[in-house]
Amino acid sequence: MFVVFNYLVGGGMFVNEMDGFYSQMSSVSNGVNLGSLGFLHEVRYYLVFPYYYFSGFSLVQGLILSAYISPIFIIGGPPFKLKIIALSIFILPFFFSYRTIITMISIYIMILCILWPPQPVKYILFSFLYASLSTGSFFGLILIFVFFRNRFLTTAWKKMAVYTFASVSALMFLGSVVHKILFFIDPSEFASSAGVNINSVLAFDDFSMSKLIIGIFERGLLYVSYTENNLRFGIVLFFWALSFFFLVMERSKLSLSIFVAYSFGCFVEGLMAFSFIFTIFVLFVYYFLMRLNRLVSKGASVPSR
Image (cartoon, rainbow, N blue to C red; front, side):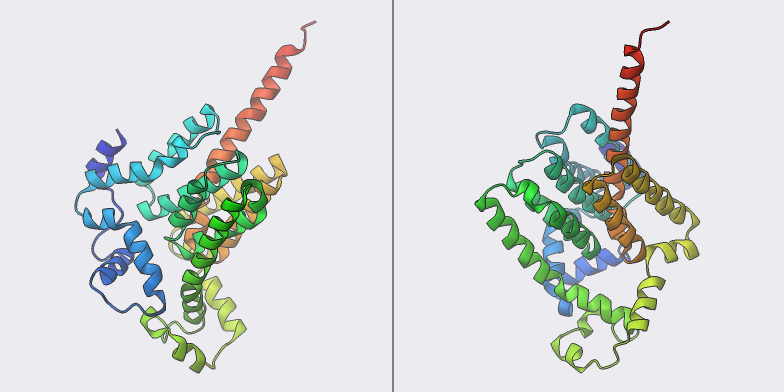
């Protein structure tokens, strides 16, 4: 049903050929110099290559997305009720890009590995790989990973595999982080990633903390959505409130880490915040239903007078 609806509405990874992400993938395909982001975009290109190859076929892209989503239903441990709630993922393509949805899956897989350990290391690697589609999402995932690394790294083999992969990934994102910092300070000079290299970084002598803070704020999700899109601003605030209610309801390290990561994303990187939306929704509904069920059970056990 999802694939059919996806075909009818023409969903896909890319909006059109003018889409910024499509342009980046097209540049990789054509061998264009992408400067400090070259290697990172190559990784992203191979990750979304099936979508790029079938960019004109929304039906095929729907099938591919279903395969990318499948780990959240295959992974062992989560109760059936949680998987039913997680079916809401198939509604999201009507509101978010496929790229955003895959980053949502990356966060959710990591959360499942934390809540129901131990899990095969492949799911942790899937999580990191999916998150590589966004610098913000990747560092949001790193934040969660650091909080709970001892929860699921139960063997020496898992520790070696995950730490090696995480270290290589962090180096891979170094160019992206440097580019973002320079762009926030001087967007006119560093609009293109091709202009960011070792020589340009060493020659840059106009660093200003005030410019950096203002640049981050003016391009942050909260400010941009407030000034340009009231609906998006409302969505951001709604899930911010939901993450706060989840924190108050559970008062756990997990709910705190999710709230902190989402809050940070609201001010700094939009896709970082959006990548947590699915996890916030599923966990809030699941834990709310569990608490409601306990209250109903307690009420039923009290004898009537």
